[in-house]
Amino acid sequence: MKQQNAALVCFSGGQDSTTCLFWAKKHFSRVEAVCFTYGQKHSLEIEVARKIAADADVPFQLLDVSLISQLDPGCSLTNASIAMDREKPKHGYPNTFVPGRNMVFLTFAAILARGKGIHHLVTGVSEADYSGYPDCRDAFVRSLNVTLDLAMDEQFVIHTPLMDLDKSDVWELSDELGVFDLVRTQTLTCYNGVIAEGCGHCPACKLRKDGLEKYLRRKEKNQK
Amino acid sequence: MKQQNAALVCFSGGQDSTTCLFWAKKHFSRVEAVCFTYGQKHSLEIEVARKIAADADVPFQLLDVSLISQLDPGCSLTNASIAMDREKPKHGYPNTFVPGRNMVFLTFAAILARGKGIHHLVTGVSEADYSGYPDCRDAFVRSLNVTLDLAMDEQFVIHTPLMDLDKSDVWELSDELGVFDLVRTQTLTCYNGVIAEGCGHCPACKLRKDGLEKYLRRKEKNQK
Image 1 (cartoon, rainbow over the protein chains, first blue to last red):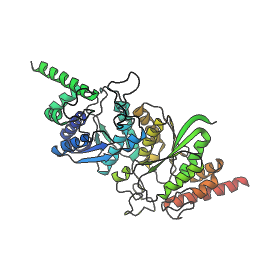
Image 2 (image 1 turned 120 degrees about the horizontal axis):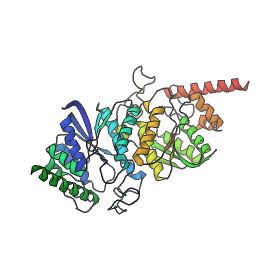
Image 3 (image 1 turned 45 degrees about the vertical axis):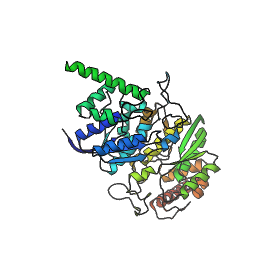
Image 4 (image 1 turned 180 degrees about the horizontal axis):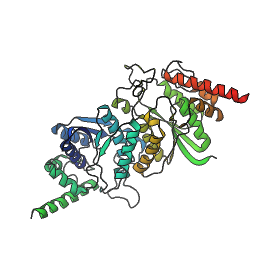
């Protein structure tokens, strides 16, 4: 059942948040998107997001939170002089991790949503994601929800439709939502800024490709 | 006893955070200050803060979070076209309230602190403050502490030395710390940007003045 409510989706134009955008369109009567720029190497990401939102008839707002990348200069996503970790290090997080990133995004999203009278927030974070970023975990999101409510004396609801899904499940969800082809051909996940199938060798491309193959095998099996 | 630890103080150059700065200098072996600019009408505030920190030999860093004032255009502190509420409205918060402001400040402070290897954060928020801003309450700060820990897999400690103090108690604390005259003559609390005693008629000046008179009466009485 569609809620007679509005939702604000944290949207990057990648596979996960694009799936979330269409999940939100299914479940809420009004959907808006907010995209965060923070000195990404690939500004193409923003144009990809803007186009997907426009095609989906979803109002799109860009927020510049590049301050975040000045706070921690050790992140390869925002500092071109640092080589990206291609694999997860044995200890610690890959240097694609921007500490506190999702917390900043969701906090700004909540402030923005509040001004629009929106109390539902949607984010594509997932615990099943390979890197185990702490601010993708369910415990973090629930704690943040309480903190946001206390900070602004509001009652936000943060939705995480992908929380327990692995990449093959996310492909399945996009298929159920009728946007499998759109996600496959128009989204940008690749760390090297190559749309759709991507560069093929960065961690994000591997994850996306493995998930897609797993889902297609499962789908084929179930159709037999 | 002085902790052999470092602390980062959220510092604005006002009475409260200046008292916190010297409280931190008493309790921690190393103290740094972070000041947030977000389109305040009075940039003098920043120069006041910078001077107090320099005189106290405390490293000072300025972070521009002016994005926050773009998110909610209904705040009089950041929008010169809106007249400031001189009194607290009967319902709701005064329009000097920037929703989520302290949450944004403390989140960025935590990210900054983490990069410096600092885990102690100090903020001058107080529940006794007249406006009852939700993000000044103890419950909010404790919830935020947990959320920050979960977001970055760290163990921050947010110190709120003024939480239960009214303005007269804050004057008393500054006296105990040996900085009563400094706070009285060098800090800027006034919404109209007048240093020390201030304009005398804005809510912040009234609060400061009433607290000062209350403390001086109490001190005189105790000395008899």
